[in-house]
Image (cartoon, rainbow over all chains, first blue to last red; front, side):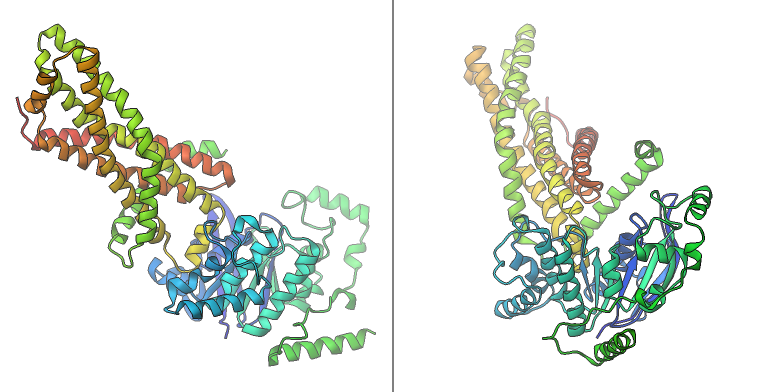
Amino acid sequence: MGVEICVEGLTKSFGDQVIWQNVSLTLPAGEVSVLLGPSGTGKSVFLKSLVGLLKPEQGSIRIAGTDITKLREHDLYEVRKSFGVLFQDGALFGSMNLYDNIAFPLREHTRKSESEIRRVVLEKMEMVGLIGAEEKLPGEISGGMRKRAGLARALVLDPEIILFDEPDSGLDPVRVAYLNQLIVDLNAQIDATFLIVTHDIASARQVPDNIGLLFRRELVMFGPREKLLTSREPVVRQFLNGRMQGPIGMAEEKDAATMAREAVHFGNALQKEQPSPLDMTPRLLPGPGIDRPPRWQAIAESEARREGTRS
Amino acid sequence: MKHTKLMKPVNGLRHSGDLFAMSLDVLRTIPRRPFQVREFVQQAWFVASVTILPTALVSIPFGAVIALQIGGLTRQLGAQSFSGAASVLAVLREASPIVTALLIAGAGGTAICADLGARKIRDEIDAMQVLGIDPIHRLVVPRVLASMVVAVLLNGLVSVVGVAGGYFFNVVLQNGTPGAYLASFTTLAQLSDLWAAEVKALVFGAIAALVASYKGLTAKGGPKGVGDAVNQSVVITFMLLFVTNFVLTAVYFQIVPQRG
């Protein structure tokens, strides 16, 4: 069963540079959330703060009631065992083959016998479709395989929270689609709390229950998928539609003059634009072979209803 | 802008503080079970394998240079019978710990720093921490202990090879008398000199591995960052080693009575 993560008033800076400030959000237990943001808005920093690798200056992060910003290093290691993290490039140990990489957390933290470890490792490798690649070294396989192996390693301790750091970066669209399906299937199977940090809009539209958007050192909005997809907030609309028109510029943010010029150029079309039902991308559902828990049953039903109203 | 930031004296202070804090962490973590035997053996073997040959090759000319210098000097003073005594003293007390230190830092330390740095920028270290494993316990402690053990053993090697090199140059090339050279061995040097040299080597080995690990674990900014870290780790280690060497020597002269 997943646990709730409750972040309040979190602020992080490096030296004089504020990365983000006063971020408050609640990741509901067992749900999939996506944190979006333009490059360089500190999404990865946020993720590292959640696992206590970086210490925020202010605010609290409560995981199942414990504020991890106040924990000592030793206790932090205990809390981290309930986390699974998929790093950008998989972060596999280069000196070990895939099997040993995935078996590593089990050998370190459990007293399982080698045959039991083998069973668990092969089960997770099958989940991510890596059967047959046990003996490969991380340097010998493609980026997509490294990611899936990293995911398998993150899964072996049956984590209650899984964090994904840009699962789509460096993958082709087909592999991204497979990975998204895998994420949804996993959520239906293990029922953990998921947080995906990304700037891939397509994934953000299809996969999550909740979406958050980081911009200009702040959390602009966080809420259910429907709320953000139909939002009229300029930053949210610009980002979710991947357009140039809006407050986000090439270099972080646009100045007032550029904004004014654009407003003249594009007229007031943007302001008049009404959210349409087409903004709602159909949600990705667990694959046919997966038993759907009640939560996913409900989601599937509401998706089917929406499909019905549209046609 | 990054470089001006690095130059700030506050930054230097913070790094020394962090390095010291990590050293304390290492000290505190050493007794923690289970001890990483495999990592320790692997690292000791690795450090030894990259240092033994260069150490031997460096210590032969080093012993020879000392023999040449002392040979010339003693002849001028008419004290040839002391040339053996003086060269043993020089090799044992100063040359061997310094040669050991240079090679442990230059060959062993850089390898440790590059290895940990590469793991750091590939997020392996973060992944390890997230998997609930303390990299200090798992990676740094075995490396520090391995480097200390190898430094002590290397120091013995340098002493033997250095003295042998000195003997060869004095007797064969400078026509010294073998008997006088050997007989005068213990007139100035004493057993405590060897112990002091071994203690020095132990401390140097620890410093080299600590600095290398610290620099490796704090590497950032991609592959270039690892290169920078290795570079800085060598420079910092050398500076620390020479200062430590001076302090240890001064202390040694204060607490152990000298011969002659």
